[in-house]
Image 1 (tube, one colour):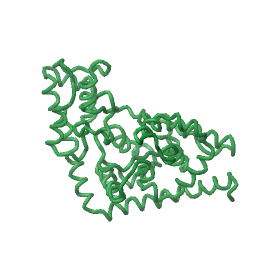
Image 2 (cartoon, one colour):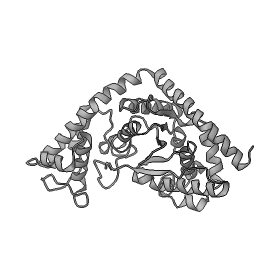
Image 3 (cartoon, rainbow, N blue to C red):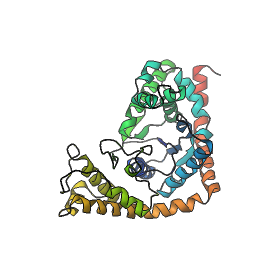
Length: 328
């Protein structure tokens, strides 16, 4: 697969969780080695679609940056930047929003879910943030976007917007292709839903900065079933299968290999094996996060330097867009 430019982003929710790491960040680290033009953004503009305290948001931006760097994302190999520092994102979102019909946005599943969570009083920003996502991608003429399954419909919207723009103004944007994440990590308390930072059950989500004791407790309390043997069958045994998936992902082994290691163990014993694998994986990352968090000026400089370079890429593309639509 020829990848000319990769774009991806993460919302600043503080220190990422196990699902973020295995589903996205680990992939980011690999992709920066495979493509010469890679942009990763801290999506602070997206984060305010749900209420945020300013001080909490500021801290979350820095904590998320520290965690991403600690996980191996290297600013020498990619552009890591804060979205709001590049004003062209918002400006292009307005232009693209004027090409996007409201019924299409109202049908998106994330709008339906989050709108309901806000007592059916969702904001204009919540409705239109998929258009901002399209602008994030298209502003750099990105060719590939790593996404999880839940974001595929948003990338399809970006593809359609690119095609609509091209039809109206002439061939300009490449239609971005999907790099689909294969690691789907589920909640430890409800293995039918994905692991989430917003889960009200504290034992459901493992954060990469959790202490060893916290990790052990969360895996000990993980929901499985009444069969003691360790097998992999996501349809009928989602809880145990989720543990097997996590074990394979953090060790780099195949499902078959981790099942072979689990022969003779019951699920209670296996939970502790998985917990120990996660602890070992995150120990150096956790240490590096703490070190980076103590140097806020360094974190801010990484984001600002990245934004300056991102702006250098975005500015000429956006100027051509302005010309195409008739602004100049």
